[in-house]
Length: 65
Image (cartoon, rainbow, N blue to C red; front, side, top):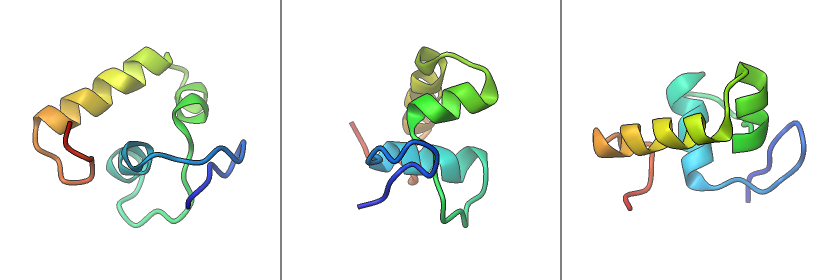
């Protein structure tokens, strides 16, 4: 299991995919959705929208719905 490096919360595969898509494909440390949103100054809903957008585009970093 992988955990957020800021708050220690367990991560979903979509959160890991988001970090790899938006920050660095080879990242080894990841932020949960809440910490990611806070770091970039956006709402968690906006983060969810981006995840849905990347999934709809067929990005293989995310789990299919």
